[in-house]
Amino acid sequence: MQIKRKLNDLEGHLQAFQLSFHGNTQILSAGHEGLRDRLDFTWQEGRFGLFEKTSRNIVDITLCSQLSPELQVWLNEFRNIKWPVQKASIRLRVGPQEQRGVWLDLANIDIKTLLDEQSILRSLQEKAFVEMGQRRKVPEWTGPAYKLRDPELNVWFQTWMHDEAVNLFCHVASFTQPSLKANKLISEQIQEWLKNHSGIRVIEFGSGIGNLTFPALAVAESLTACEVDRLSLDGLQKTWETLPQNIKRKSGELKIHAGDFQKKITQDFSEFDLILANPPRSGLMGFIDSLESLQESQRPPYFLYMSCFPESMAKDLSRLKQWGYEIAEMSLLDQFPQTQHYEVLTLLQRK
Image (cartoon, rainbow, N blue to C red; front, side, top):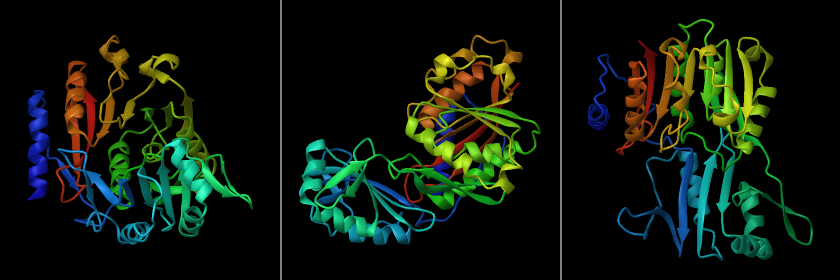
């Protein structure tokens, strides 16, 4: 029943922008519960949880069927900590080898409070890898006191190339998909769609740590990964450098473009066969404005768009429709079972 509701919701968004898809939307599912390996929540005045929809009150969360068993155990232990701060944004994570991580996004004065208090951090570091603040600093015990050192890359997520798992270097605070199991389905779908296009040249907007980069690279001749976040690019670069040779030999050429790619990268899209994008909730915005000024034959033949926010996706697809693109394939990933949310992968083809 929930799949039917989500299909109807997706169809509604497409119809709102006069978009049509005459094929069958493929349903991808990794299970009906226990998928999340990452949890983002707020601590406020003794409550751990999420804000209510209609107020700023926190709904205290003790058990959640969305969490993987390992993450539920980690949450149970974490809730026993007595915090000397009034408010914090927190991310708990369980990695591919079931290693635990926690990111504490606190005000500077609260970070200092924890560093001075010492005992909470010591206890926490016995259980997990700890990152603090927007700069993802790592607390380090020096003997008499704690100090914060530079961020440290570790394997906190995993993608797939061919049938091989690829460990992604990043931070606990890095953006990743919420589920390792569901992410395997995303990787497989991308490779399935692209494997029939030999010699394909890909440009990816907002590659992040490379979650979609490496599956596409498994079947592409080349891929230009564009990203503005320096910390994400550090992880992408390290993953590429440590990629096993047996996988690297079967992969295309990776080019990394760091910085504001809208202003500094060549706008000659005719040298690419496919645009790959997984934009934020706001959608593509101005990322692809330069496509409008190109002749139709200069635009890449394919566009692969992934989104967990169908409202902005449909708006973007309507723009692409005006530039000659139509929906060729569509998959709905039930990545958030028992909720109204879902992930969509769409392959568009230029007429």
